[in-house]
Amino acid sequence: MLDDHQERRIAQGLREGKTDAWQALYDAYAERVWRGVARLLGGQSAEVADVVQETMMAAARSASSFNPERGSLWAWLWGIAHNHVALYFRKQERRDRLTQAVAELAAGIEQSTSIPSALATAEQATLVRAALAELPVDYEMLLTAYYLDGETVASIAERERSSEVAIRSKLARARQAFRAVYGEGPT
Image (tube, rainbow, N blue to C red):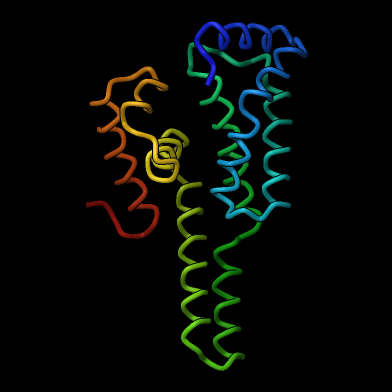
């Protein structure tokens, strides 16, 4: 994680179009972007590589317009990545293909307890990933940091320059939004 001084220096360099600033941004966040995208896409390396590459290219194209007043470098970069993951899901229509594949397998393969169970698990993982991709980027970042990366509320609050109370409140709203997108409705 970059400190405030490093982030300001990189942000200034990005606005000025400096190559070393772009390299510093890439060095600081490329692996984290890869892990986040892989988590959302389910680890299919070819698709992950494509989305990460599209993310970095989009970041490079818009680097001069980065505004540190609107948020951190990571939030800006992950917002770009999140948008590209959502585009990936829309282009691929993954949910429709998965439903069709399950129907074809159920019709053409002798039923066994392991195949339906494996398909149900894969389908649930795909639906969770798709639901996360449909959320606002700040909710997706918060939910994945807390539930998938195992970060504490305190560490998230420190990174986001916020209070723990604010993070807990936002986490509650993010969970509610996730339930609504995932199909369980608000509670």
